[in-house]
Image (cartoon, rainbow, N blue to C red; front, side):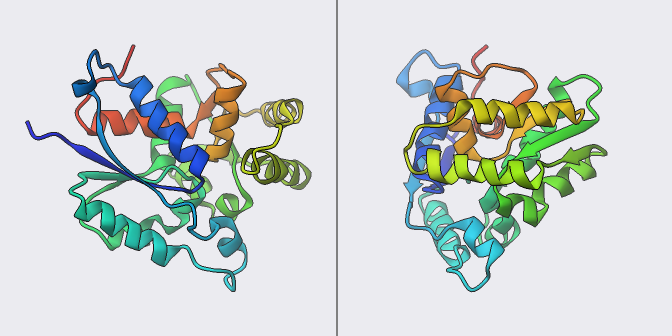
Length: 236
């Protein structure tokens, strides 16, 4: 059987891209180097900020750069593409239309995983950038699945953006107590699952070893889907 090649349209952000690749390796059931997935990683960190553009269309548009990068990955004979950035999925449809290979959708995979793993789930809380929430990408997919979506209050969202941009992306110390407080507020609103819908938040989950089944990491969901799409097995 022909080896499947996974293309990673990365750099959005750089740390999240490297973490995604690390997850794929660690979550693959492989006993030798040759049993792992072949990946072409384009860690293009100069792509304009996605949230900036979504909130203000006068800012640099990341779409042309992302389309160019997707075509480069297609030209490198990749069979699938992943974008380890939730906010970038605002541009998903346009990027997908520009190429002839499938892009695995991190949002869809995350909501499907919540349904599969959390019994009687009715309400999903989403922690994400303002750009992701304004685009209603998660809200639309969650509602399509017949579930209710909950987002943070304005004050908690401002605090979350500070954690994402001024702490994780900036390489500064993370206020983990504030992060846990925001998750707690979502659970107080009756959320059966809280999705980490920003890949910088996935990095926090890893660094602070947060291991709660109702805190669902979108990056892990994307890694699982990528491994299976490439015909490999998940590590038990």
